[in-house]
Image (cartoon, rainbow, N blue to C red; front, side, top):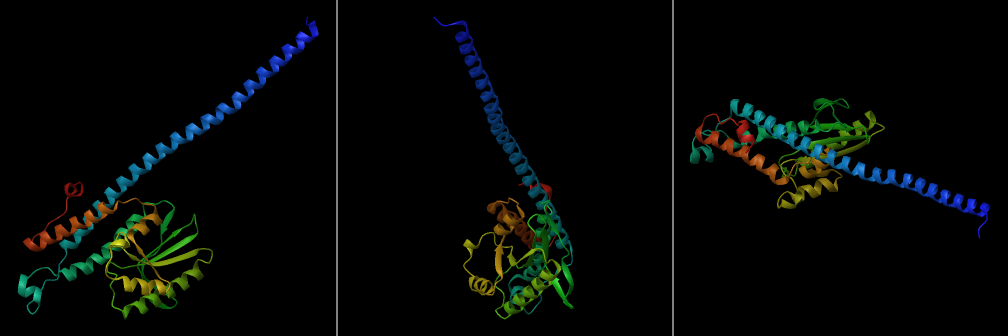
Length: 269
């Protein structure tokens, strides 16, 4: 038979085991809760970000349509006698003139997109003094979180005349050199933003120019890469559909020779 002292010791051991068990459960339970709770929060945050992103893209499209409407309301250049276009179609708004105006639309759109990301700051763009000479900087912004300055020349048409490429490369290198002096603690990333193309995989022309630029150290970015940099999600098909709609409206105006303003109803289509 067990003595009274032995019984007490056994009881103490059992109590100690129970206490240890409870302490272990207390430690494990919060850890489990911690794992579950952040996962739920992550999903909620992700859903919020997706909603914010989609709302932003919708707003960007509306602003873009307003920009296009203002362009269409301005005095356009018309084809004149002596040209093939006039001979075949008669007096029509010049598509070449419209294309030149739309080149500015790429700058407007990219700047509006940058505004979406709180960690990015748009810097002074346009004509400015660089090393004593006037230079037109299409797009420049900074990322303080990663200490990066992004500088882009925007090209809707990557098929530049061959003789223009060296001048563009020289311009980029001059501006990068100036930026390195001004932002000595930042990494400078420079490139050409070919914003009319979402992904290079569809290109069949202009590839030789791209190779020439990139051999010279100037990377060619397309819209997909740019959106990744600024952390904006815009679907490729949706991106192209948006511009096809713009094109349809412009052609409608040209055909009818009357205003063809894009409405919010069109935007929601």
